[in-house]
Length: 101
Image 1: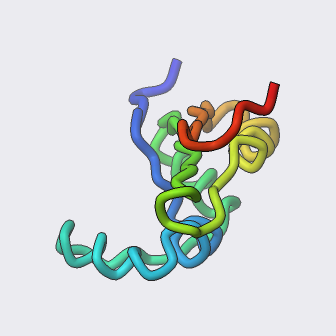
Image 2 (image 1 turned 30 degrees about the vertical axis):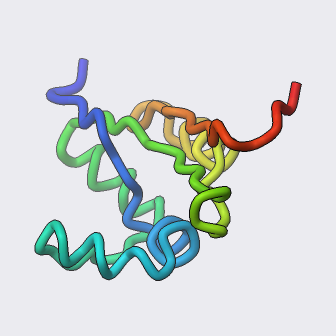
């Protein structure tokens, strides 16, 4: 059993910060009064393992509102598949997109 669960993890990766958030990243850093240090997923998984924690990774799809590409559910699922002891996935659905099923 892990020591703790982080229930709200926005990945500090290039894929999220520079692609999905894009121009909004700096505004988020300013609002939260912090600078996000980019890491690769291997380092993030190692950090969580060292802390004996599980992280709930958030997908992010605000494409219709921002025009920016989502950090997709499949991307998050692949990370969880690679690091099942460290991460749980939490999907995102853009309600403004057409139904895919």
